[in-house]
Image (cartoon, rainbow, N blue to C red; front, side, top):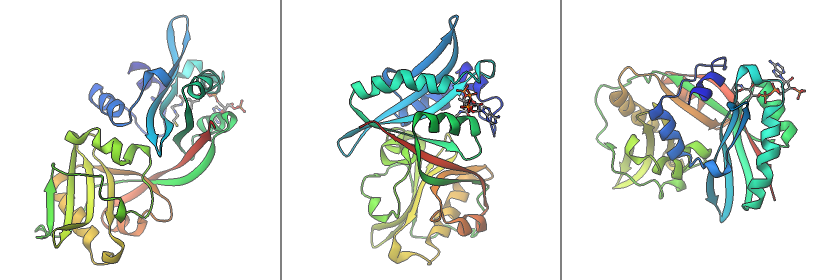
Length: 266
Ligand SMILES: CC(C)(COP(=O)(O)OP(=O)(O)OC[C@H]1O[C@@H](n2cnc3c(N)ncnc32)[C@H](O)[C@@H]1OP(=O)(O)O)[C@@H](O)C(=O)NCCC(=O)NCCS
């Protein structure tokens, strides 16, 4: 954890992992040390790539959950060299793809991933802010609950969530998640998942035929009740369909854009 925090000390924004947050990340993103890699210099961990593992459509996929090189070991292409080491291991274990996200202005990271062969699959947007409480009362159709099921909600989506926000990553840390639902005739037609440890909204959606009826506003109003004055993040929303105007209106501002990148191992 010390190496992670030292590697990110000069990052684009502040990253400070605590043991609690690192454990949550390992469990949520299914990080597997058997497909992760460390670069050592005289016994010192100089760089690392932690990969998560999931089976998607009967295919083993890996996810670069976090990469870092200590500042004093940079400019030696350690990231590229770590991939040269781990890609044959991943191939041997039957992995078909690696995916990751990198901030669009992170030149050393992007150069490294492009040299390895990754290509951009999507542009993603990340928002931050204090949710404005637009109404004082909760709507009667709203329910805030820690008892929920995520596997029957994908019919509401317009696009697939990224690795960190997909159903499995959320279910893996169920005890950290609050679900806010909006129901019509006992059916969920809008919902939001909020992670109480990372303070991030991991998914939110309203069924297509119920849009423009202020249902998302009511969901976020309930979130404001739940979070109070806390800063909240929503990361990795697919660009163009992120709902930027709506998010700005309720108190969020875009703070970075990321590229989702993929490398086929087939
Ligand atoms: C991203 C990171 C892991 C890359 O470290 P590294 O493997 O040592 O990479 P290098 O320093 O060798 O740089 C790779 C390339 O970027 C170039 N580069 C490095 N710093 C640069 C800068 N500030 N501006 C422009 N180019 C830069 C290098 O010259 C090299 O280019 P080349 O391939 O043409 O020779 C490291 O910078 C880091 O730990 N950053 C903080 C954490 C982070 O950003 N993690 C990745 C999150 S997606």
